[in-house]
Length: 228
Length: 228
DNA sequence: CGCTATTATCGTCAACATGACGACAAGCGT
DNA sequence: ACGCTTGTCGTCATGTTGACGATAATAGCG
Image 1 (spheres, chains in turn blue, yellow, cyan, red):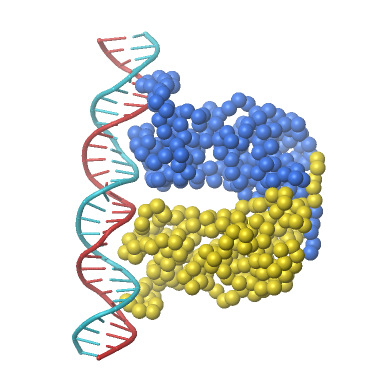
Image 2 (image 1 turned 90 degrees about the vertical axis):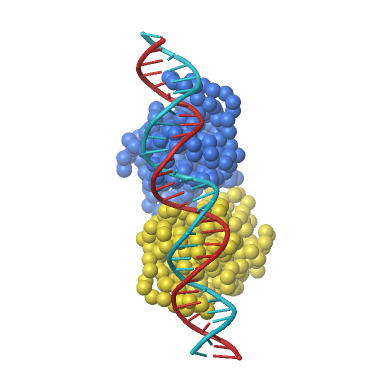
């Protein structure tokens, strides 16, 4: 059996919402290949490391974040023969949805790290096949917001319904009716739980604070098709 | 950077419906490790082969089927350090949903291949971590039947509404109301198209024949929560 | 041939969900 | 106090759902 020499890496699609835009964490490459180009954070899987561990370690190294913050899941694996000029490299991509937190820490092999609005990233901007991986990650996030409570992963531990609505509006690039959205979110079993507290964000009537509820799936779901 | 020697394989979760049960194709291993144990079909990725190609090739080798038959997608990747006693092996699992077709062909490295009802497969029956991979594949199939027209992948090119309903009932392990199911399936945009023909299956009034429609997503979806 | 068993398909209805939108609540700045 | 802004509740017509009745179209049988 021909067993070729293969390197295995993990790459991270880290998404957050900053300044009203869906943003991804990118690293400016400090080494060849693609030196100076933007790329997804990532790195080699160590010899005695499970894939999830490797991804969690990279997340910590690049951002200082704990994988339990927000949401973390395997996205897909990419292994086309020519995707890395150094040789056969198979990469397992992970997707993380994170609240807006302090700036990332630049890793050792990166000249810089920055959050970039995903709408500003164009085909060919990223190294390797990272355009495709990023696009797949965004699509996964969009789809999962319909049927799961993952939108809360973009929010801090306590949040208002309006903040949650802005997550949906930003990720889906739509406007949602605040009154219907409020009804659906508070009506979906286990989506959010009131903490009892209230806050004033900017102007207007104080809003109730909520935290994430115990549900893993939304019933009923919030479908993108309609106007909510 | 420590680049350990890693082998990359693909494993296939092949699901079909035979004799009213959801069944998976298993191979009895003809070589060590786990000689004589049942396992998912699969094999090493060749040096110049993309992952999807490798999975499609394995599908052809094990079953003689073309990947365009039914449905074919990447499932997930498994790479825990100890999952294969031969060394570090990362496997990319693929999921295929297939119509009930002639028996599989035993591959060269397999002492035999057989369809086995997934309910008869118990924890520890399969080699490696294939129990887990199979369970993940089944769960993916269950979930995708809600929001996509993939149930048609289990059917021949032309099928009746009752046959499609049996797919749902088998995969979900529920009973569905024939009248409501008929209404929903024929009402969901692009799910199925009438061919004009009719057939008599066993007894009763002849049923209209349908083929798969153009939709990639179901609107509205058929949710598992209710009774349909 | 009529009867019955069987399956397919259409219809009805109450309960619930949805989208559009009005109304009021509860803060702020002036 | 007044208007502005944002949050929350309510209403209503329409659509979807689940439960289930009714009818259609066949085979098998006496």
